[in-house]
Amino acid sequence: MKNYKTIVLSNQEISPGYYRMQILAPGYDAQARAGQFVMFRVQRSLPPLLRRPFGIFRTGFLAPDCDGMPPKEFIEIVYKVVGLGTEIMQDLHQGDQIELLGPLGRGFDLGAPDEDKILVGGGIGLVPLYMLAEKLDNKARSRLLMGGRTRDDIITVTEFERLGVETYVSTEDGSLGEEGLVTQVLERKLQKYPQATVYACGPMPMLDAVQRICANHKAPLQVSLEALMACGVGACLGCVVKGAGHSEETPRYLCTCKQGPVFNAEELDWRQLDEPQQDCGGCR
Amino acid sequence: MTEMQGQRTTSVQRPRMEVEFAGLRLRNPVMPASGTFGYGEEYSSFIDLNQLGAVVTKGLSLRPKAGNPTPRIAETTGGMLNAIGLQNVGVDAFISQKMPFLEQYHTPVIVNFFGNTAEEYAEVAARLNDVPNVAALEMNISCPNVKHGGIVFGTEPQAAYDVVSLVRERLDKPLIVKLTPNVTDIRVTAKAVEDAGADAISLINTLTGMAVDVKTRRPRLANQIGGLSGPGIRPIAVRLTHQVVQTVKLPVIGIGGIFRAMDALEFLIVGARAVQVGTANFVDPNAMSQIITDLENFCIDEGIEDINDLIGTLQL
Ligand SMILES: Cc1cc2nc3c(=O)[nH]c(=O)nc-3n(C[C@H](O)[C@H](O)[C@H](O)COP(=O)(O)OP(=O)(O)OC[C@H]3O[C@@H](n4cnc5c(N)ncnc54)[C@H](O)[C@@H]3O)c2cc1C
Ligand SMILES: Cc1cc2nc3c(=O)[nH]c(=O)nc-3n(C[C@H](O)[C@H](O)[C@H](O)COP(=O)(O)O)c2cc1C
Image 1: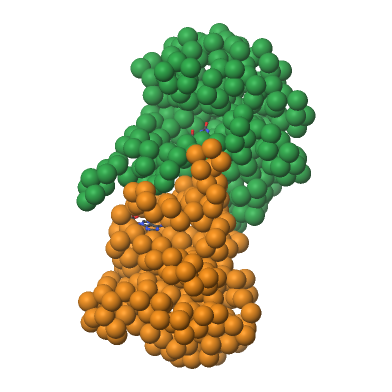
Image 2 (image 1 turned 180 degrees about the horizontal axis):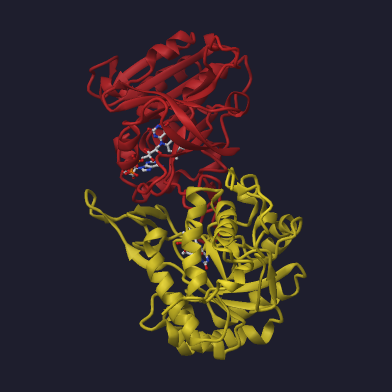
């Protein structure tokens, strides 16, 4: 866990409104685990005031230059432009200075190599699943289900396929892959692979549906959550979610940044969806 | 003069940075603001706690407190609103689980606390009074008094006087009282708190505010109203610090929107003996460390041998 100034290596639009940014990030390849995130300081001046959290898409090394210097270590993030911070980010270029705090949070538990795995990503929720897929030992027994509203929301498919992970695409408008919700596909896959462990990341309503399906099938589930956060290290208590067994009398709040963002489904109180959500849930 | 990573490397005489007040002796006047630094441990891998003037904990209550529903934070131009709802582990768990970590450092620990009733305040203070390595208590009086229709203690001079007096009876350690800015005339509260036996005053706590999501037409905080902090509140905090320094004899700790050494200097010049850094920690975990270094550099550049020579030197 470190904070340092670093530079952008590249920043490209990969689908309308979605960008992929490579950042020079010494130390991350050895340290970062699938499911962890970084707090990205968009610019040194204000606004935006607070850092923005982004999942780590992958880590790696650039092919060494011929100058005899050690190869450069990087991380990649994939982000959707939704507001002030990400609007500024989309204009960043190679060589621009930024600040990076991380790697932060609890990542995915990779589980045993000899079990079936189903990865479910909704829209931008795909991001942490790439590094997870990369780290899984038995890719032949891993399947990725990705869902989005339209074809523009289906990103980085080829990268997943290149890993040797079987991928299934569904869109709500039918513009790419199967028409409908990703959860329909999950239902079918769980019938086919009843012993599978499920990993999911996406908007809360999707996670809620995934949770109900997994509970019916008694399939173990890990989810990666998003929440508004200020610090990313467990100090501000802004990003809490209700833990299992939460009640007015025996409150049990968990920090998304520190105790998550990855949780086992049974650690959470799934009734929290009944409460008014922040407006971001539906759009991504 | 050469500069390397912000640290002057020449043989210039380093200025004296220690400050002393209310029985506290701090290696420099910079400390975190309550609620923005957890219990110290959260930031210990980013900043050496031994560098700080003091550590100030999240606010503690008699029993653990759940806090508010989410969303609890909202960014605003030049600041942020929070309605965390004073979620904390409770004073007993703090003493048994959090204090041992802080005891590894040589930095004075200031414990922030609050209550729902005057009796609760006094009980928390009494429990902390018996913890040897707690250097001082900071009393947050920006809390509603549940026994009196939820009126915030700090907004009623008499209620502030009564609750501080009650705590004073149970506490031998230095008592810092943290004032709310959400009052008509802060000088009246400051005087009441001084008369009740406080050893120091810290200010400001957050300013109450509200933000609306125009698409959903809902408040952006589940609690509707929250506390505004960050750079945008600094001029208000400087003004209030100035007014309180002019009114009471007690030492004052300045808080509000401090992001850089220049910001901290404003508070020191109007007469604060120390400063607390809050929201800036979220933006940059190294903020306090940089502020301490830059304060020293400022003193060197200005030929100031002792930072105390700067305190209260406002030219009018
Ligand atoms: C652990 C974690 C990992 C994340 N990973 C990614 C990722 O890989 N790619 C990606 O595009 N986004 C990711 N997000 C969400 C991302 O942080 C927000 O989209 C971003 O902060 C928005 O900043 P902004 O200034 O552009 O928007 P703002 O102007 O701040 O807000 C615009 C909209 O986005 C919503 N929003 C703001 N912050 C968050 C947040 N932290 N979480 C959810 N919604 C938010 C707001 O409610 C608002 O509706 C992640 C969030 C978390 C907590
Ligand atoms: C997330 C958050 C939590 C806070 N919690 C507390 C608290 O528990 N007790 C308290 O006295 N003040 C609390 N405060 C107020 C700060 O200590 C400080 O007075 C205020 O934020 C102004 O300083 P700043 O502008 O530097 O942040 C909190 C502030 C924030 C932003």
